[in-house]
Length: 266
Image 1 (cartoon, helix red, strand yellow):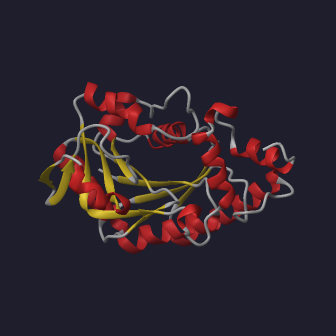
Image 2 (cartoon, rainbow, N blue to C red):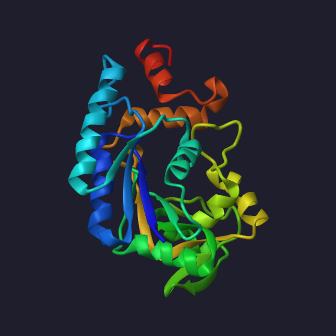
């Protein structure tokens, strides 16, 4: 019965370090096992396209190995094949039991409350939920206009929303649910990034699992556009391209986008 936290390291090493430090500061290390997943991120500086992308990736890999060792986390290297597919790679690597929980500690999500990992695990196990999300700070002001029910599981207050009411931030997924679906779904038109909620809602319903938001455990989403110091302007521009201008080139890889940016074609 393990809470597996894993950081899909497709971001600046400095941002991965912030998230990892928060994980250990806010939680008892006996309550989780943490993986730093090296996905070959091509930037060393948030606004600078490197002269040699492969060399930048190699230097980042060495930094991530040292980071994982410093915190007592496990380092693992995987190919970056899309957010959902990366979740599936981690699932296949860990081979969780039904009692295990997989939690994505994303580099751009900063939890605010002590003991949030154990809270996710306890709520999923007691409530037999397929998925639990932390409460996004940006959603708090919306709560008065969103229908919801309030319940308690694992002595934690949770909100139950209708499907599609809110997008999720940092999530934990039940090993039992994952062992049924076998892979994290994604929309065919967005294989790299985005819209995971719409792909998971039908599967949760089909297999009889609910989902909820932890009312008293918050997470702040960080982003260059939100003014968070140290975040990458180039990473944000690429995400905007493959989400809001997906009709233009589809979902280009970040490497492809950087090469086009270097050549002045985008």
